[in-house]
Amino acid sequence: SHALSNGKSLLAAGINKITGSFNKGENVLVVDHNENHLARGLASFNSKEIDKIKGKQSKEIEKILGYSSKSEIIHKGDMVLL
Image (tube, rainbow, N blue to C red; front, side):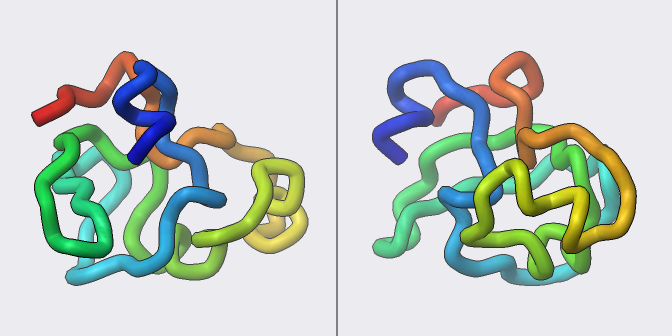
């Protein structure tokens, strides 16, 4: 959440948990561990992919998913802070 407030993109390493099912490109809500609403943004991955890479460093993503992809879960340009 500190990174988000500094205008950074949301990376896999910053994610602890995924709730619900969604597709790539869907508008998702980002909350902290106290369920405070932090931001909304367009997901660069679907929920299953994010569940596999959550908590991981960006350089590990390609190895885990088996293909090259964006490193941001939600790019800062696709995110609105709440």
